[in-house]
Length: 498
Image (tube, rainbow, N blue to C red; front, side, top):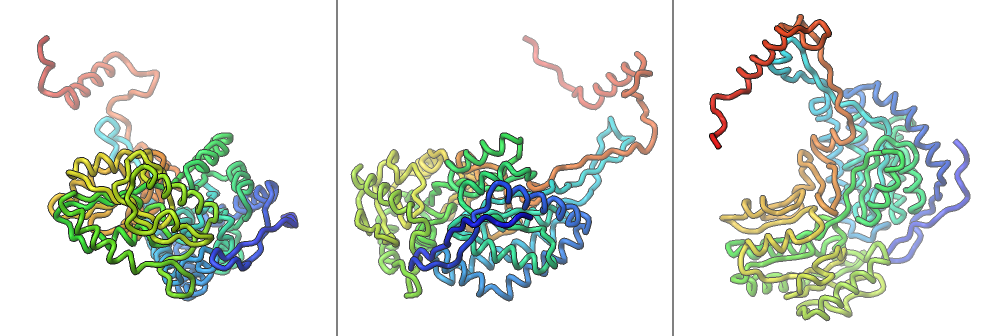
């Protein structure tokens, strides 16, 4: 490979401004070279089979587990989130690596399927083959857990991976790639490219066989446009505006704790977190009492007991401020925090009630430690308001009698009942959204298949009773075919008379 460009950028600690590390800005040529190297490695990675990949992936899982304090400290420094939250994130990623490595053979391996009566002379099988090289563009808010949903599943499916982490968390990406390469004894199966949007754009056009992206809907559109030039398929996870619904028979203490965690943890920088809360009017006041009692004890900080950290991406501070000011200007009632909550690095917990449904804080992703809490007259109204968004990623419902039926009515890829974001920690469940939240899935069997193509094979075991696919077919055979169709599918009823 050619030497890296002399252009570099610094990764900064958002809480202190200290330099965490310095990384190269990879050019188009360097990205293409990296992908070409991955293509060679992909052939070996495919050849070692499920058993070989499982062994190396489980070794990587164990290395990450033994060194989890290292990666948690790096996540803490590059994102500013509390060390404990970074530890939790890394631990969940480890669990997903384990599941993907162990279940890939059963999900993707060759299996026999029924051929049907018309093709009873055929033995039919299907298996799922690796695509080759998968490009992964990761986010900064969960720089281990989120990209691992693509990296681990793509690797387990037999692909090589080229990973472009966020420019805010390149050190985390470097650490992940280095530890895997150590396990793989230097084989370039998982590789890194670093830089800004131009580097990500280059990855889209580099010849990868699929591109998995996590980020904003606006950037997701640019990724799709770039990939469309080469018909490169994409997986897009583009954020959300998730709601938590509280029914009148809910455990209000549990619902308040969940809403607070879903809205404020990780400084509100969670795509599947809570931004809107709809509470049945009969329990609105006691719910707010519970919520505020808990929220008053929450404060941000860094290594000083703060429960969440600074805004990792400084430009987000202006968006958070705009949403708060717009909600207030439209008549929302501030019950905690407010228009002076946004500082130079940190945002204080902010809760606003009775916010109009057409306000920015209700319609657009805020990505800050804020909650909009509105009363509703019924669960029908709660569902209607929840679904009145272009997004459709996740959500939560708290209640007893009707909670599950309410959850089924929410237009989103994932919903938890009487908890928040639990689905993300379940390796067997697919993760992804609809609408402007994107498409495609990571995690679970769907996530494994996402990075493959199905290969169907039929093997003729005997001559067919009716020779249909031949120029020797005669009228008698065609007649028998028509009679067979009638017997199989004609049914016993007739159309009603007009």
